[in-house]
Image 1 (cartoon, rainbow, N blue to C red):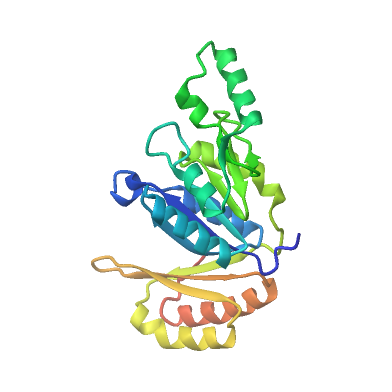
Image 2 (image 1 turned 45 degrees about the vertical axis):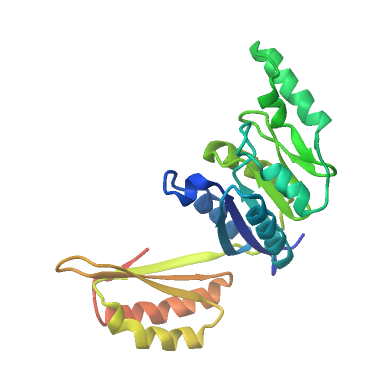
Length: 250
C-alpha cells in the first residue's frame, strides 16, 4: 500500500499521563517510525481512563485519519479498560481470544506460574479484532477497524509496533535539515515567512533556545521532495548567515 496521503493519530490513554506522574515517551518513537514511512502524524490526543472519553476519542480519530495508534490501558488491573472501550466504540463483543489465551497459558506453563484471572484479563479482545504480537510479555495488543491498540509500557509498545509496522503504508520518507545559530526569532520572522511562501510544500519551523547572553535559534525544514528541501535549505542558510556567519548546519 502506498503511503502517499496516509495520515495518523496517536491516542494516549491513562490518568498517570494526565497527572504528570508518568512522562510519555511513546509519541517520539511512533512519530519517528511513521515519518520514515512517509505517514503524516496529524494529532496526538491524551484521555483519562474513562469509558466515555476513550470511546469518543477512538471514534473521532478513527473517522479522521488513516491510522490510529492507541497506547495504554490493556493491562490486568481494574482501571485497564481500553479493550472494553474499544469493543463498545466499534460495536463488538469483548471476549477471551482463544489464540491469546493459548499463548498466555503456554507462557505461564513455561514459567511455572498459574493462569490467573489477571492474566486472563489481558487475553480479552473485541470479537473479530486481529492480534498484535507482543514479543516481550506475550499478552497481545489488537487491531480493530483502523485502530491499533498497544500497551503503554515503552519497551512493550515498541516491540508491538515493530511487529505491525510492515503492514502499514509505505511512502516517501520525510527528510529533515536544520540550521542553528545566534539569531533572534524576531529578526528572522519576516525573511523566513517569505521563504515559506516560496516553498509551501516544505515545513519550516523555528525553535529558540534562549540563553542569558547568547540566544540561539534552530530552523528545521522537513519535506519528502529532496530537491525542494535542498532549494529551501539554501535560502534559509543564506538568510541565517546574514545574522551569524558561523551558523551550523545539521
